Each structure stands twice: as C-alpha cells, then as structure tokens.
Picture 1: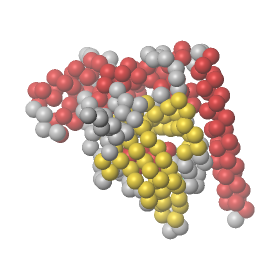
Picture 2: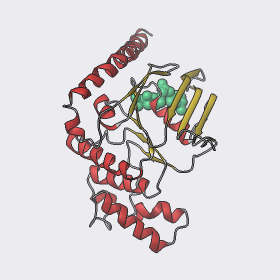
Picture 3: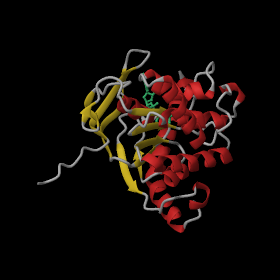
Length: 278
Ligand SMILES: Nc1ncnc2c1ncn2[C@@H]1O[C@H](COP(=O)(O)OP(=O)(O)OP(=O)(O)O)[C@@H](O)[C@H]1O
C-alpha cells in the first residue's frame, strides 16, 4: 500500500493581500506569494522594511484573510484563528497581573485541563526554559530575557505544531538575544514544530533556520528566493557565525536581499522628498 504524503505544515498559494489605506486607496501589500513550510522545518523570513513579513504571519494565524489565493495549515484551509498555532511577537503577550506560573498555565487551563495538572505542566515548562525558582514572580519583577522565556514556555506548553515568531528577540540586548536564540533552538529540538521566524537580521535568520526566504520590496511583495541553510545542528548561535559555510550562505542571501533593501530605501526617500515638496 502506498503511504499518503502528509500535507505541509503551512502552504500559501498565489496569495494576494490588499489593504485599504487611511485615505481610502487600496494598497497591495503581497501579490502571488507562494510559500511552503514543511513539518518540523524552521523557516526564517527576511525582507526590506514594510515589505509584508508580518502580514504573511497574520494570514497564517488567521487574523487576516487573503484577498486572493489560499492559506492552509496542515492541509486545512485557514478560516478564522488557526488552532494549534503558537505566536511570539516583539512585545510580550504575558499578562502583567498574573504570576509566571499562572501565565504559563493559562493556555491549558483555558482548554479545560484540570488546575493541578495544568500547574504541574507549567512548572515543568518553567524549569525547561530555565526559570525554576521564579514561578511566583510577576512579569514586572523579571528582566526582558526572562519575560521572553515566560512567553516561550507559555507557547510550548500548548505543544503547537506551528509557531509564528515576529522579531521576538529584537528588543533584547545582543548577548541576551544570542542566549535566547540558543534556548529557542534547544527547545525547538524537543518537539520540532514548524516555525516561521520573521527578522530583519540576516545573521540571526541563518543561525536559526533550515531555510531562509527573501521577500521583495513592496508594494506587491512576493518571494524573491529561498535558500537552504545546510549548517549542522545542534548550533551555537554565536559560534556558527565563524563557520566558513555560514559566510558563503550569508553572501548568497545578501546578494538577493541587498537589491530589495536598496529599492525599499529609494522608495522611502522618494516619499520623503514628495512630502517635503508638497
Ligand atoms: N491593516 C493595514 N492597513 C493598511 N496597510 C497595512 C495594514 N497592515 C499592513 N499594511 C501595510 O502593508 C505593508 C506591509 O506591512 P508589514 O507590517 O507586513 O511589513 P513588514 O515587512 O512586517 O514591516 P517591518 O519590516 O517594518 O516590520 C506596509 O506597507 C504596511 O503599511
């Protein structure tokens, strides 16, 4: 008997997304975008500022609908908020009035898991993200890096098969950021969900991902190129940068990205000039 090939974790086909701007004019953010992320794949998305990286995530999450084309998660068309998907954004989504353990156990509690079991599982995840002993602290008593750990535990406790991350570590200092990236890779390795990780930082993208996708400059952004990152795992984020293969990959991707960054930059300076002239 022939085994059925399981669908990819995420599939966007010929996706176009139009917004209506404040002035009422239509703005096409994405056009004819095709993106496939396999089960267990760590995919980083890079592209010039404002090209549509976050919009791509909101389409997968179900927070926004495509104007044309289709979005599917595990073969199911996305129709409203996608179940089984975790999110991590630049700003923390942790609740300031709840302790660490209550924040982390909130997901299972919401799904109806009995309190005792939810708290046990939360303590387990808090330990795995390196916060044992901080269970009863409140978010304002934690550093930025510690709050990110809480957000990671809050996500991973729900055992998502897909995690969407939008510059989750960009507010952290450089060292904490590298440390968190290592933690993320170690935790990802435990359950290997599919990840889409949006970042401005090409080094971060290569250090973390299996594939790096480059978007073109907007409007009507689409995928310019997709690169396989064949660096060995496990990786230490701050050390993998010195691998000669890392530099090769960096140069290849930067060649594709640089043109798009230049286009976006000249568009933004032209807009500034127009504004000054009017
Ligand atoms: N709700 C909205 N209404 C109107 N325009 C929007 C809306 N959301 C996004 N846009 C526009 O769509 C384009 C893509 O935005 P998006 O935030 O996805 O880009 P990005 O690549 O994530 O940006 P950055 O790199 O700055 O984080 C931008 O020009 C943005 O202004």
